[in-house]
Every structure is written in C-alpha cells, then in structure tokens.
Image (cartoon, rainbow, N blue to C red; front, side, top):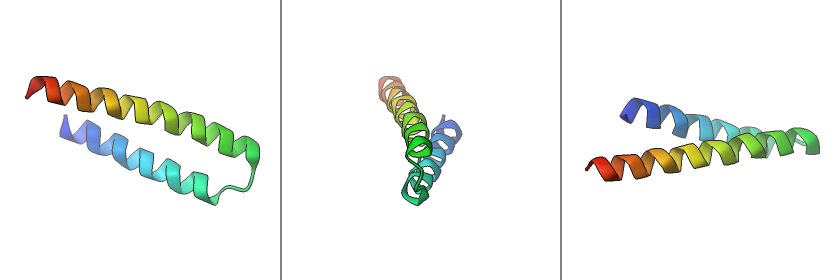
Length: 53
C-alpha cells in the first residue's frame, strides 16, 4: 500500500505545481478537478490503512 500511496501523493504534488504555474483559467479548472479527485483517493487510502492497523 505504501507504494500506491506514495505515487498518489507525488501526483498530487505535481498537480499542485502545475496549478501554480498555469495562467489559463480553463486549464487551471481541469487541473483543480483532477487534484480534487486525487485528494479524495488519497483520503480513501489513508482511511483504508487506518482500518487495517
């Protein structure tokens, strides 16, 4: 589970960097939507890890 969580966290950081660097409102909206989805996935994985502990 660590590898999957680490990969998702890295993707989240990359999306945040892209969001900071874009000047296009439409692109920013698309990146924000993907970022929100990844944050939900990360939250679900964290809850799953807590239940397994």
